[in-house]
Image (tube, rainbow, N blue to C red):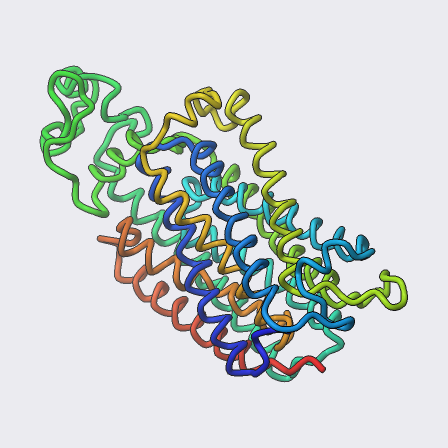
Length: 411
């Protein structure tokens, strides 16, 4: 009934999941940096995220002959499997909260560091729980050194963030009260009088009449670029405490660490909550219920945030959301990538063990690549920052290989 029936197939699923799950955050970050409200973006994202689960359920979930032991997706919808369904839906709730939280953490902490912290918490808590839930089918002598590699990479990631923040502080040191110098808040002539330390090249990049247009794009990594970005983005971060972003990030990490064990319980019933004779949920059926609850939570919270926004975002409305087509295609694509990424992770975990499937938590490796390529993260940073950055990426590669090597085969 499951398409993944070999260790090689499980590894392919996990590698694709790693690519997809590391890419969708970059797309949502791109839209936020362009000024699109995160409430609008996440509503689009969650629609296609559910669509991906429906596609997987009605294609992969219907392949093969339905049997009493392994019924197809449609057959399972009418079975008395509600204990497992509730576990799957609980996993969807915490994943939705985690994904929604990271959207508000990226502007404060940065795409790469946010993903690193979330991945570390997921590996430490989630992978350990999955190891015992899976009856230790993974090779502990390989699995836990892999977890250790993740922790080393996390430490390096924290050092990268600290070093890069120091670099940015040096870049902005030539600006007086830079947190108040928001391009577009005043015409350039007034800014020059108010903030004489702002150099001419920065003022030249502003529209003289309205202070909003950009004649010449600032180069990645410069102080001009940092100020220009603050003016464009929807979530303003200048002058805010970094503890806000870190708190959101840690909350998201705890949520992420719980969704995979909940899904594991839904598909394998280790706590024997199902009645005798009731087959376990297939990974496709569980993923469907998982995604439905994820969708419901996201819709409820984001519609609430339209009218009662957080972090000083402007109010919006459902009508304004429907008419906002700026970047909608990217948001819809992000939802598909996340949906198929999660589905592939679970398909690989069902065969090779969910502890090994948690190797996809090395997704910061992919997110960092997009962060550097698309957003210019770490551009014009110090040599010390580059050394730590390369070391972090190398350790993530080692961690992925080690965790995948620990995979067993579920009987």
